[in-house]
Image (cartoon, rainbow, N blue to C red; front, side):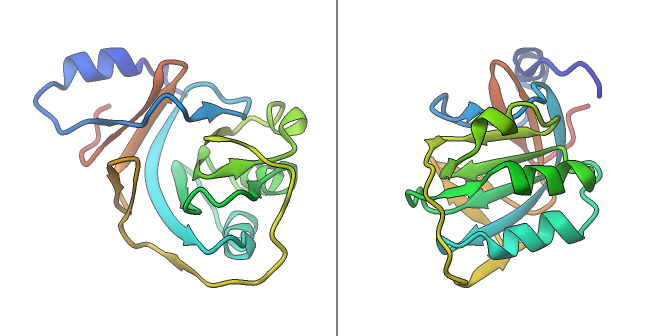
Length: 161
């Protein structure tokens, strides 16, 4: 993985439309620097579709952005992180909560979320994939790019490195 420095990317690309995820999102994974192309998924509390995606698809060079509307359920835990690692996903960014963080912090995947919640939703609710999602004033589109390090998470419509 290339040595990413989001501050330098912001400085060197002032002419690009770079957005920054608010600092309330924290990294609960072991991978501290990463970048990749965005895959989007919008959940309705339930993480079943996300589980299938991480378990069954190759995520080489990709970051999944999950919108769970900040519902108070742990959407990603050690099991989904293990699937993500096995299938080469770079990271998961959740507009919501995660769980099993004592374990997720040892799995070499980035995992940004707004907090933790041990409760999980067991319903099989609907979800949508590949569509534009917006949260915290940032619009995430399938195929856009994310770059992250300890300073934060930035997005760009164009590849910066």
